Image (tube, rainbow, N blue to C red; front, side, top):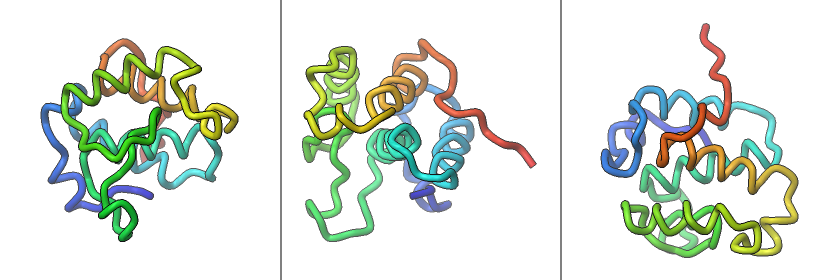
Length: 127
């Protein structure tokens, strides 16, 4: 799901270490692409990093973390723990690890937005 303008305005500044506009552009691009494990992982990871509640009633609206699926609010300590877990394939729940592209999408998004150690996980199409 792509971010709304109100989602973009509510992104927790200490959760994302790249420019907000760039982060939103990648998140929006991922939400517009055909769904596959990689792009779904990018969307899930961005939504969790942004600490934007889901628009559903599941889990009280809290977005689950992309590696461990914990219902926890993203803040620097929980993001650091997910980033560390993402480095180990066995840390991903089996259903997630079996989805083609999921682990790579989570790692690429966290490396870029949190660790600043990689390029954006998707090229953004500019019009």
